[in-house]
Every structure is written in structure tokens, then in C-alpha cells.
Amino acid sequence: MKIAFEAMPFQNFMIWVTELKGDEKFVPHRNCFFECIDSERWEVNEVILEEGKAGRFGLVFNQSNTAGTTGWELWTDNREAALACAQRVAERLELPLEIRS
Image (cartoon, helix red, strand yellow):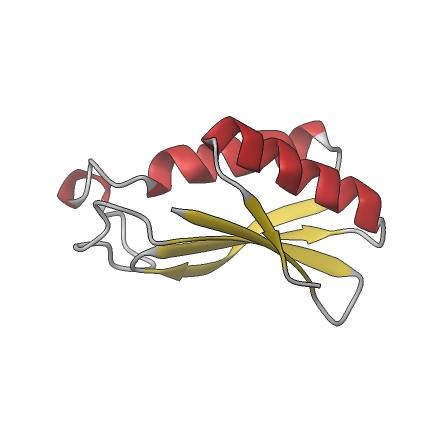
């Protein structure tokens, strides 16, 4: 897995996690948990959602769902808070955080 933090154009930030193992049978917008039960996606999504709620962001939602990738958007203009959230996620997943912008 790889994790990255990226500023978006309109006062929001993305946390991207790519190269998810066990995600070969993942189908976006379909409840396919039991088809890819060993996917790293489920743990990653839970950690990001927990940390986003703990950071008290107005809105945290899964913006990108493709096989092997999950991308979560944090709606805030507070870059420091969003980056701190991404760093906590990376620590929990034991991954180095790439900062793209």
C-alpha cells in the first residue's frame, strides 16, 4: 500500500491509498465485501473515516473507489488539520506519507 495527501482546488484535501492488496474483484458502487473479503480496502476506509471524524471535519467522504485505490476527501480550508489527519492515518497503517501539494 501507498498513502498520499493532496490539496485540491477548492478548500479541500484528499487522502489517497493505492496498491490495495486483495482488491482484484472489487466493483465500485456494489456491495462486494464478500467477494474480496481479504482486501486491505475495508481496514483503510475504516481508519480514514475514524480519523476524519476525530478531526471534526464538516464532511469526510469516499470520493474515489476503483480497484486497488480508495480516495477520501476532507472538506476544510485548514491545511494543517487535514495534513495532521493524513499523518495519523499513515501512522496507523504504518506507511510513509507522500505529500503531493
